[in-house]
Image (cartoon, rainbow, N blue to C red):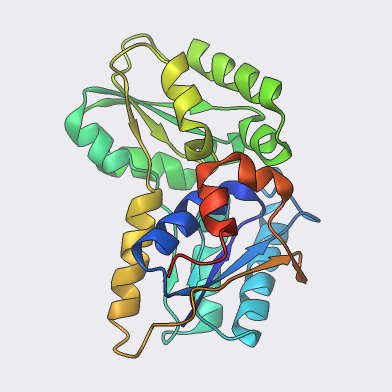
Length: 255
């Protein structure tokens, strides 16, 4: 079974790596979009067209499950993709872990891109799952882009800026962009001691596997990882191997 994961850049790596670790026999199709990245600042209609078009290409290439391990894509295009592919193809989106963080801590910050921070989607999540806690959105300007480009100093600067804008009483930080787990150690080091981090990539992978199991048909494959770059067959960007998740996906096989 081929599982297609769609994102503009390296934000797909954490969820993809979890899928490979949990079910190494799955065949993964990683559909990145370097020509159109980043998606966050683009108009909504443009993002919808790009994501739905990528999903269409994935189906043409044999994908049976679609995952959007990207908050921008999920916020903007998830329902459009579901409508396009129909009820027989599972489509799994990404939801920032506001609910478990707010259930456990009285003061929470949600780090995300500017687009996600400004979205009605995130505001609704906070309203629905805030659980009476103080939940503060923090836009991490340029962090996802710096991770994609492997710009280590810009990553450090963006994290430091986000820390300064995070209320001092914050007890937990939700990583509301799928790029951010790639630098989770740096984020943890920059935050005050004791602040807990919440990341949804493992949960998205687990939900994907539940949906696959619910299809009732064989899922085992060869454990291959195929990469498409704006529709062209390619390879993982060299910067992907800067991260544990990228190295897991670049390995020949986990079988």
